[in-house]
Amino acid sequence: MTESQGLRHALRIWRTGRELRLDHARCCARVASDLLAQGLDRWQVLALSGALARARPMLCEEPTALGRRLRRVRPGNRQAVFRAAAGEVVPVWDGGGRKRRGAFDTPPELAGEVVRLALGAAEGPVGLGMDPACGTGAFLLALDQAGVDRIVGIDPDPVALAVAAVLVPRAHLVRASVFEADLVPADVVVGNPPFVSPERQDKALRRALAGRFPWLRGRFDLAVPFSELAMGALRPGGGLGLVLPAAMMVQPYGESWRRRWLEAHRVRSLGVPSDFPGVSVRVVALSATRGGGPGAMAGGLPVSDVLSLPAAPLDARVTAGDLALVQRVRAESVPLGELCHVDTGLVAHGPLGGKARLLRDAPEPGAVPFVDARDLFQGRSRWLAYRAQEMHRPKSPALFEGPKLLVQRLRGGGPVRALVDRSGVYAGHTLLVARPHPCCPVSPERLLEVVQDPVAQAVNRVERGPRLDLYPQDLRGLPVPRRWLRGEPAGLHAAWGLDAAQASTLARLASF
Image 1 (cartoon, rainbow, N blue to C red):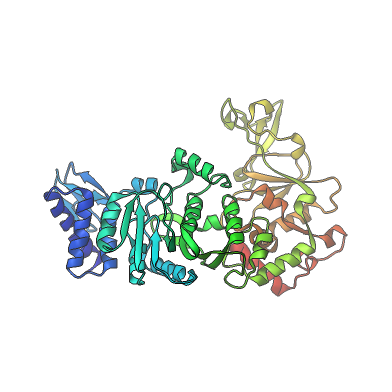
Image 2: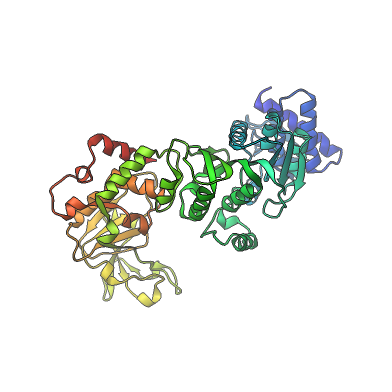
């Protein structure tokens, strides 16, 4: 049976349930039951009935067709797998609902791999396995196939639980949010957190979590408290397997969590970042044992070395050899922040309106030359009426009115873009500004070499994790060789004590 044939068949079963006046949850459960009775593999049934469970019933006001992902298409479209008449109810793709709930189900291969890793991380016998955000049951099914004796699933969505109950009938299911449920001690905990952006998260829930976990920082992802609760639901020595946002391993909001875990627990494995279906989030698979304290990461990188880094980032692509080279560079360098004053550019909008109110196309009294990153690298500039009292972050004129480096903050996946400015132009907040101190013995042009060098960027990346945006602390931390400060005429890599092969080894990290 092809994917289209399977979905068409599942939709027919769902429509029969509606004709029997069943609600959406019971219709989806009926689909799962009937498909199992017809001999379909449980993972196939999960894919079909799970897709329906994540849809929303819609009354058709006109003849309607559904495509392979339950998206509406024209009735005559060749991609249509199911057609409905006006007045009929059909389950349609619910992208908005998925985003609000963070409900994105785990692929079978990933669920099975995470369960395998969690079982491998557990010390002692495994009797109880739990998924505290089980959805339609991918991890429950993987636990069942792995032979775990007792299985518990928790989720607030009754429709998803109705499908999970059919697929894994021996699982004990609880309708609740992981952030409110009483979690019983388990031998293994697996799952993935709700992927909800901070902007969409319930503000009352965020306040409650911040009170419960006072070490949470900034615009934290819900994956951080989710992970803490999942670890807390394990017995000492229990095994954990989670699918987590890759950003949580390296971004500042996850630093407190990383340090807590690395000091208290034993990380057994960490995957490389990969795409997760249906959501624009890169994820990693992580397994850990509760308790046991610091040890060695997978690949032999000592946890004590990770904890010594400024941001304690976790990245499976960084090896002990990489860290040794970074330490060599650091020993031969001083941070750029000791030689320059580093800050973001000014924010011109304020309580009276946006910056367009202060921008001019031609000079006038009281106006200063001004650029944002987009204009800077296209050779354009405008004029800004510099009224500090009307700006959100005006900055001191001394930051701009001398030789300085201007660095684009939004790096993306490409190289760092920067240049030397000697014209006194004022910079907007899309740029970082590095103004050398009067006693700095190195020219701005030589500092520009450091800023744009892949090895310097790799040092920052190892110590602080990958960055799409450059923060002032990232720029301050770039290594400037001491030999340059002493006036020795050496190339940059040689000044750091690196040969060509070592420099190439480090430079590859700058592209990750």
